[in-house]
Structures are given as C-alpha cells and as structure tokens.
Amino acid sequence: MSLFDVMLNLIQHLTFWSNLVRSRIKSGMTKLFFKNLFWTRMIGVTDIDQLAFAAGKGRSFFSYNRRHFAKIHYDWMKLKKSHAGMILSDQLTIGVVLRRLMRLYFSLNSDEMRNRLEYLGAWK
Image (cartoon, rainbow, N blue to C red; front, side, top):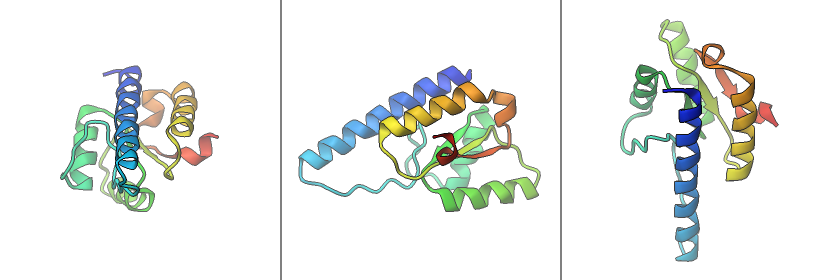
C-alpha cells in the first residue's frame, strides 16, 4: 500500500469521525472521547496490537494518545522491533490535522518514516 493510499484512507477516517462527532453534538451528546485514531477502526484492540497490526502491514500509525504511544515507540526501539512510523498529535481540528499531515507526507517518504516518531505539532 502506498503512502498516498494511507493518506487517502486517513482522510476518509477523519471525515467519518468528524461527521460522527458533529451528529453526536447535534443530538445533545457534547463529549466524545477517542483513545486512538487509527484509520482501520480497530475498536476494542489493545494499543500494542494496533501498532503491531500497522507495523505488519507496513502502515504508519496515527494517534492522539501522545504520552502512551511515545513510550511504546521507545520500548519497541529498545527491543529492536520495527514499525512504519508513528505520528502523534494533540487533538486539533480536522483541517489543522490534515494540513500538517500533508506537510509531513510531502516531506518524508516511507523509508524516512520507518521507526520514526513524529509529533504533528512540529509540522505547522
């Protein structure tokens, strides 16, 4: 799967969640908590299993759970486990996330992302 396909799937996923949040807010539910934003919608799967799945497919991983996944990244590096890259972010608006992801996408290729931890805040 190319990085373009990953970006397209991520955009579709972000659109899905954005529409879900809007519909929940309109229906009176004002707070939604999403532990991880992973474009394959692996609900109920542990964080390590989500990362292992993404790594097995050669896919970069995106999450709002910065503290936890940063620790997992460093643990994996100590164990010499490989992943296709981790992108961590504060919870920002969809437009801001997409703009920053596009800057990242056009700056780093798949090889450069391998085993790399990127904070989306650095891509303003």
